Amino acid sequence: MGTIKTTNIQSISGSGTVTLGVSGETFTVPSGVTVAGGLSNTPAFAAYLGSAQSFSDNTNTKIQCNTEKYDTNSAYDNSSNYRFTVPSGQAGKYYIHGGAYIYGSSDGILQVTSVFLRLNGSTDINQSRLNRSGSETDDDISHHTQAVLDLSAGDYVELWGYADTSSGNPFFSNSVLNTFFAGFKLIGS
Picture 1: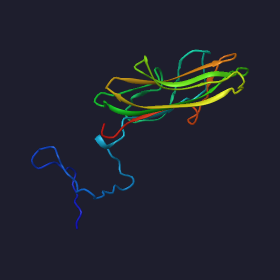
Picture 2: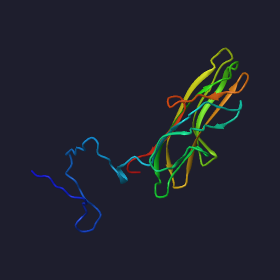
Picture 3: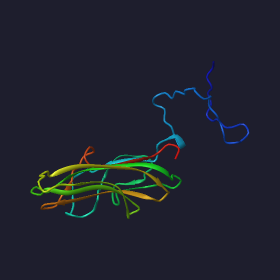
Picture 4: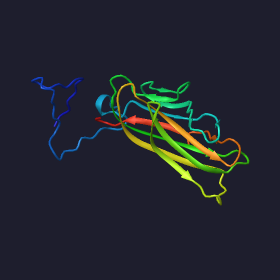
């Protein structure tokens, strides 16, 4: 058996269909190979909060993940709107996830906390929420939320949080492990 070397494979008849192998066969892709086009999980982004972000008690607040780990299509705004916007021609299903570590003030106990995704500035989706009883005394909590969203070009997604403390103002803790926002397009969507 031989090796085929080429830069382009197209159907002979122009039908747009090319079949590789038959049912039951396995194709091996060596490590280090980059897949582009319809078989790649792009656009993709990941960002985290570079420094602690304080916010007003009992108020929904956009989490400002301002430090990018990667952003394959320059679709995440890490400097002003802190949102992922679906680029032109990239509509499809996306896996979006985020998390936040929320602290109460130095003397405040967290009573209610939540982290959620917001679509196009108004639709709240997939909230992670915790209500505590009066006997609990924790001043910190970690939340994670995720969703698979069917997005059109121009749609945008943001990460938001909320906390109600017994006194003072809460804050989101910084670091890539504590407060983050990320997502990618699902292959074939």
